[in-house]
Length: 76
Image 1 (tube, rainbow, N blue to C red):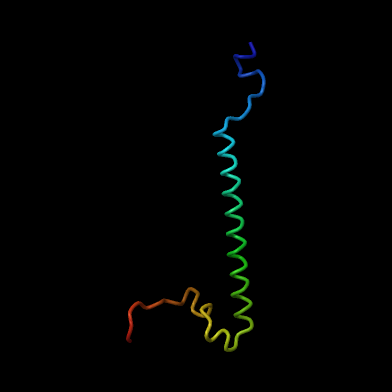
Image 2: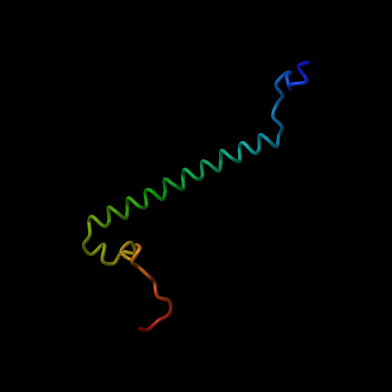
């Protein structure tokens, strides 16, 4: 009767399942690392904005933000 409800011993995971689990773990690690990098970049930009001065004047961080639109092409 145990076979009727899927009872029995535990089976070993297949190679494909193990690879899928490892790939999932690597993917989560990469996502965490990317999130950490983005957070550090945002903190660096905030720090730069707080310091201001000539560093900010010539910094590419000054050109970032919602109000900045980059025009393509030269001239006026």
